[in-house]
Length: 352
Ligand code: CO
Image (cartoon, rainbow, N blue to C red; front, side, top):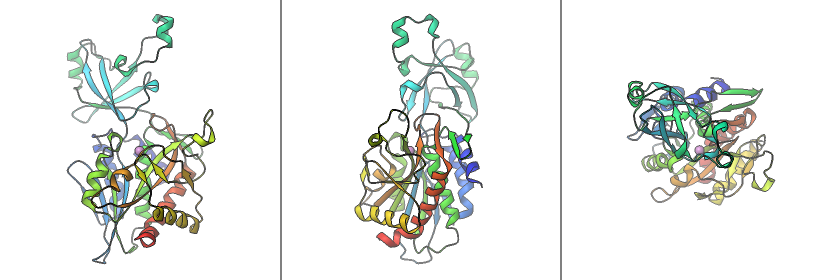
């Protein structure tokens, strides 16, 4: 599949934390042709495994998270409006005034809008105040609680602000869920690019649930996989934009894959970091550092599993993550995909 179609399908798929079924099914279809075995575990991690013929082989784990931030329905008002709460880290300033897709118990989708009172009827003080999520509501067109229920809506239904994937210009694209569907896309491409090679290690491509609510899937995944080495692949905080000084831009678009030195969840072991730098340089892949110590990643949970796991992090720079309009350059994606492929081939030998 063409990269742009891969990103489109993955970003448009529904997968709020804890409700990753649709995106998991899509990933299973896309990755299966390139691996020996695909399994789903109890809580919803998907493991796509390629085994080495060598019985004593070590295990490399690649990690990307399936889930995206979203909301769940908290309450249905008597007049049919819905109250909702966030799942994952939203900026409350950007929630009002969007279209949403709500997934009902049957798996079907109901459209809605996050409404707000128009400025005409607000006092000057009200217009200046920010809107806490408790004051927001979703309008699905129902006129009563019963009508909302007849439309299939229940307390606990998940929803996303939905913006379909779009090309802004040639090579520059926007979508609702590049954090972390870009990581999923990188893993799928790395599996495809290394298919048929005997790498001398077992490779597990782990697509995990629940990162946005506390690295949950990565923890249970690493416990089962027992990796000797892991690489988490993320879409991370591109902040090269007006008003942000250079030293406060965690990563920049157009500068290639970002190698993490340390984030809030991990300080990367020096020999993993230097091996990653060497592999990028040997393959002539430009890279940048993700500035310490912004954000946390699945590597934080993975490296603390059992007796400890060597782990590194590679990210595709994305602007506007944790909003419904994340945006990236395909050239950065392409370089990250090549880099992760080189890491799959070379990192185990370099550090184990
Ligand atoms: Co993420």
